[in-house]
Image (cartoon, rainbow, N blue to C red; front, side):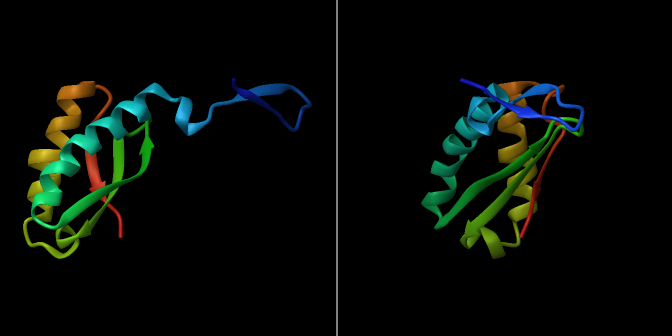
Length: 99
């Protein structure tokens, strides 16, 4: 159930928890699928955030992926492409690694 938050004007506005956002849930599910491939090579990926206004997914590459010279190619060719296929290019414009 969504909670409500009182604004400065005293009006109640619904606060959407991250766990309730269906787009974020789909992104996380997609990252779980990609994670299996990365773990084979000693790496992993962690969801950091999603900016819907930019269509930008922020992730953190971990393990061997964090320092790999192919990390950018992995983000573009595997992670970003997989999420675009799952959610559509209107929802996912880019995937960026944050350290």
